[in-house]
Each structure stands twice: as structure tokens, then as C-alpha cells.
Length: 391
Image: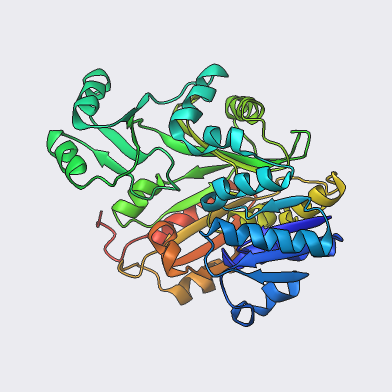
């Protein structure tokens, strides 16, 4: 099997996908714009061959790279980056080289939030009201229907980039004054806890791994308000959430892909769909999959591509949590105190690259326990401010 992996060095842990592909017997072909000798050794060792392009946004260069690989190795069987940023580029390349996976005729449904809403509605899943608006008059008409606050986000945005909460007419006016030249969708603001339904399907669309994460707040609030963040996996999934999640996986025809579907929990058994992402959850969540289940999800994915099967038994043994700290916050316990007091639970400590720090903090603690009470207590103590009365 010949697999092309775009940008195999980013995010840093994604070389594990390439390494496990190679271990499973695939020919792993990397494309990126970084000089080969500047790639980490772990990345270089995971690749069969590497093709450097001058600009990853130059489609012609990417076509030439795939043409070279096709001439040298034969038909390309798979192409991916597992990164939301490259979804449209990947779909276009799959069209041009007849590669299995998401194609150009279905990319809008998983990139444009307005198109996602239609699929959610058609599948019977409640979704936040939203509308793409071209000007302030159309925005005012929508606000007349749903009221403030509202959320403004790029219709085809990545993560919470350039996403804003608008609370009044002054916010709305300022937004349109500074608005980027891109299509924006306005959504009603939903109060609730964000939970995600995450997992991986085989090439027939059957779920081979799934879990759920609960978030302290949305990424929009984390980024725009400079907060630290925490989120943790559940050992037992809420039945209603799992039912909705599985319905969405079928509706979006997820095949041989990771998925990350976000919901607002507005009451004990009430959920409102937010959006769907055809990629692994961001940050270090793939590592959290492993810690929660004592598995290697990189190996599971690679063997699924190469053999079509998942032979790894999967059990959610632990709750696994990521809790961040910000360098500009002062905390009651020092880093060394955290490590000394909670080392039996901590499985990884990460210094977050600057490009991710606005969403994931500057340092992240990953810890696990079979008991949710441990997770909640440790999160509180990690993030407790120096002044315990501080907001």
C-alpha cells in the first residue's frame, strides 16, 4: 500500500501515524515544505521517501510531487494529513489521482458549518440556529429572530480562529467594521457544557473506537479570554449522546476516518449539535486515547488502513484529563509541587508550542484515574489560583 502523508512533521506527535504505517508494511511518502535535514529524526525514520515542495499552497507543486511518487511507486492508495487545514487540498488531490477517501463533491458538508447544519437537521439531530450573512442588515434580521448573544464564526473556519461572541449592537457594529473578507455564519448562543463524540471508523463506516470528552469551556472562550482549559474523557458514555453521535457518523458517511463531533449538553439528556470534524480531536487527544485505554491508536489507525481490520481489543479503563496552565497566571501550587503530589496519576507533561498555546495553555498536564472524583479534584488543584478568591 502506498500512502502519501502531507506535512508529516506537524503536529509534532503525528509522525507516530507514519511510523505505524511503515511498521504495518505500507510505503509511507511524505510531502512538506521543510528541508529534509531539518525534520526531526523521528519523522525522517518514519518515511520511505520525502518530497520537498517550495510552497504547500502551490497546488501544481503538490500534483508534481504525487506524479513523481506515482511514477516511482505505482498508484497512490491513500492520501491524508489528519489535519483540518488541508481537507480541501486533500479532496482535490484525491479527485485528480483517483484515491480512496473524501472527494471534492462531499467536502462542503464537512468544511462549511452551514452545510453541516443541514445534514444534522436532515438526520433528526437538533442544531443551533444559524445563518450565513453578507452584511449587517442580514445580521440584524437574524438577531431579531434569536436575540443576543450570538456567535460569529467563519463558515469554513478552522477551530475557533476568528470566532467571536457578540452581546449587543455595539459588538455587532464593531464586528462588521473589522470583519475579514470571508463568509461568516451567525449562530444563536447556546448555554451548556460542551461534550464531544470522538472515534474512528473502518472503510465500511463501522465504528471501531469511540469515546467522549467533556470540556471546561469552548475554545472560543479559552482563546478570546486568555483562560486555561481542561477536558477529560468519560469511561461510560451518556446513552443519548452515543445515540446521536452514531447517527451523525452515519449521516456524514464517515469511512476509514477519525471523527470529532461537538455537542452542547443543555440538560441531563438534551444535546444540541455544534459541528463535525473529520479528523482526530486536536491537541494531545490522540495520546489521551492511548492513556485512557492502554492502546496505541496510531497503530490501530495504521493497521486499519493497511489490513482493513482492527484487531486491538479496546476498553475504556480510565478517565484521562488534560489540564493547562498559562504563564501569565499565578497558581497556588508550583510545578514541582504538582509533580510531587500527583505523580501516581500524571502520565505526561507537555510544553505547548506557541502556535497552540492560546487554545491549550503554555503547559499541559495529562493524568488519568478510573475514578472521576480524582480527575475533578486534581484539575481543581492544578488550576487553583494563588489568590483562591481570584476569578
